[in-house]
Length: 151
Image (cartoon, rainbow, N blue to C red):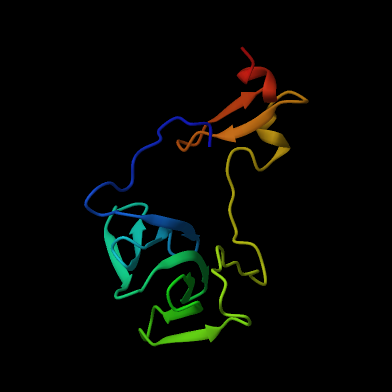
């Protein structure tokens, strides 16, 4: 979160027109809707292996994940599309007044995913008024808020 050890997960030709990104917390992967390739894909954050979840999507836009199901808005079908990642069964939800393009899709899980890092307890021992940001290697950076970004 502090910007160290950042890396590019995807580039051309794996991405053409990405419209939405969602984190699959239970599988440690990032999923995205790509209208240019007309697909929904996910990339494993550890192995960097890319998996195509859904093909032949018309124009996927917003994307949300809830357990084994992925939901996305489609600008051509004007519906919310669904795929079960276990069975590969697909479905649709009609949108009332289906002449509008739905930009985003969101879901509210019954509980937040469990996570812990060096900043979880006592603000990572940063000073009062500082923001603790994990660095991805078990360490952290303590920042003084907006003061770090002023000219």
